[in-house]
Amino acid sequence: MEASDGPTGRFFTDTTVCIGCKACEVACHQWNALPARQGGRVPLSGQSYDNTVALSDVDWRHVKFIEQFSADADRSTSRWLMMSDVCKHCVDAPCLEVCPTGSIIRTEFDTVYIQEPVCNGCRDCIAACPFGVIHVSAEKHIAQKCTFCYDRLQNGLVPPAPRPARPPRSSSVRSTSCAGGRPIVSSSSTAWGPPRPTSTAPTTPCSAA
Ligand code: SF4
Ligand code: SF4
Ligand code: SF4
Image 1 (cartoon, rainbow, N blue to C red):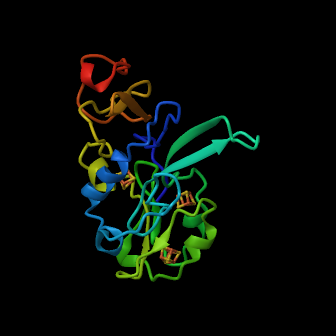
Image 2 (spheres, protein in one colour):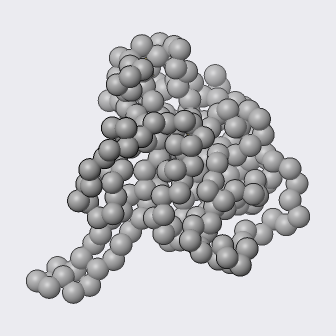
Image 3 (cartoon, rainbow, N blue to C red):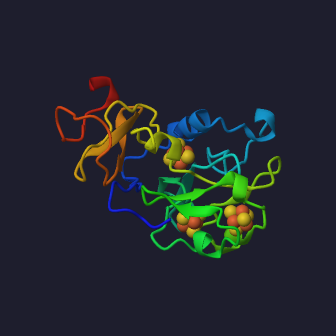
């Protein structure tokens, strides 16, 4: 399916305000009814405070925790970077190009979507994606990744946020999900959602919103 001239969906994650709360991971699991890995009995990874570790067939969004230390022997200075990683819904999507069954399509929202009933589990898309996004489900034996919540888009909603409330309605409007006092900001060039009283993204902490 060719991209339309209508609303298009893209993520913008502002890593400068992400606090790594992982609420976006939880929201994705909840909306898409994704099971916990190993029935929730996941051992601590030992990699910072990140026990999701990577995108997987049941983790379609992953907040990376990246610890960086100075080169001196005492590692006297450090910084902690967080980045909520997900399918990029590429403009030129190699996963879509290589899929032999036509399972992966460009939706009317310009997002990249895997039609599960059409997938034969060949894994070509896994090799094609440069970002390690797609994984095959051990239970369903088909490719899995972020759908950009196609079901929500079709019903005029944006992807779920831990604290949604304000869907975008123009290219300059942001939707926010507040995480422990600071907003995680995602932007979109859509015209979805009902009119809002203001187009200014909140910059105040959750508690003051
Ligand atoms: S799965 Fe990979 S290649 Fe396909 S749209 Fe997502 S990021 Fe791009
Ligand atoms: S695993 Fe499924 S979605 Fe991926 S390339 Fe093969 S048929 Fe297409
Ligand atoms: S858009 Fe939907 S499927 Fe994609 S990461 Fe967000 S909640 Fe998950």
